[in-house]
Length: 287
Image (cartoon, rainbow, N blue to C red; front, side, top):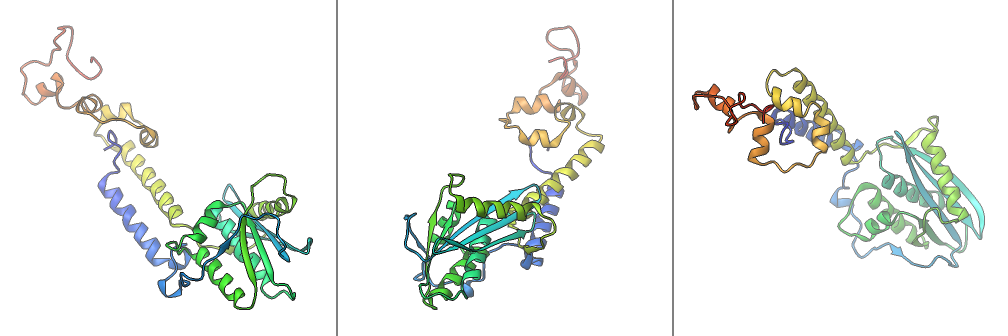
C-alpha cells in the first residue's frame, strides 16, 4: 500500500485499538471533555472585554511556553500596580501550548480567590486568542476550559468581578514579559514537579501514528514483495509527505503491474515481452 499512502489494514486496526484503549482506559490522563453533569450553565458566561486600560484592582498576566518535551505556565499578579505574586508551573511534556495558557489562567484565579481586599475586581490578560474563543464557545467543554468557567462562577458568587482581555504577545508589555519569563523557566526547569498531566487526545493520536509508521517501515524493509515500488519509495515517512495524484498509469509504473509487456508476458497474456521499440524487453526501467 506504499504507492497510495494508505496504512496497511493490520497496522491500522492495531493503531485504532490502542487509541481506544488509551482514551477509554486512561481517562484521567487524557484531556477530554468534562462530563455533562459538571458543565456550567450557558447563562453563566465569561466576560471578555477589549479594554487594555482598566480600573480593576487586580491585574493578572498569564502566559505559556512549550519547548522540546517541556511545557510551562507563568503568572504575574499586580494589585494597585504593585506586584503581589508571581508563579510558575510545569505541565507534562506532551501537553500543548494552549493547555499551558489555560492552566496559567486557572492557577491565577486559584491564587487570587482567597486574597483579602475590599475591591474585588480582576482583569486577566492573555495573549491566547484561542483560549478566549474557547471560553466564549458554549459547545466546548474541554477540561481546563470548563474548570476556568467553574472557578469564575464560584468567585463571582463571592462578589468577585472578573473580566478577560487579549494582549498582544511580545509587544513590549513588561508585565506580560514577566509572565512569559516564568513560563519559560518552568518549561526548562526539570526540578519543578509536573502539576498537570492530562495530555490532549491529539498527542495520543500523533504518537500512535508515529508508532504505526515505524512498524510499517519495519515490515516494508523485510518484505520480499513490491521490489519495484520499494525502489521508488524506500522510506514510508517520505512517501507520506508527498501529495501524489494516483492514476492507473502511475500505479503501473511504481508497481510494474498491469499494462507492461514484461508483466503481461509473465502471465502468458502476451506472446512476447519485447517493447514496441524492438530494442529490449519492456520493463519499468526500460520505459
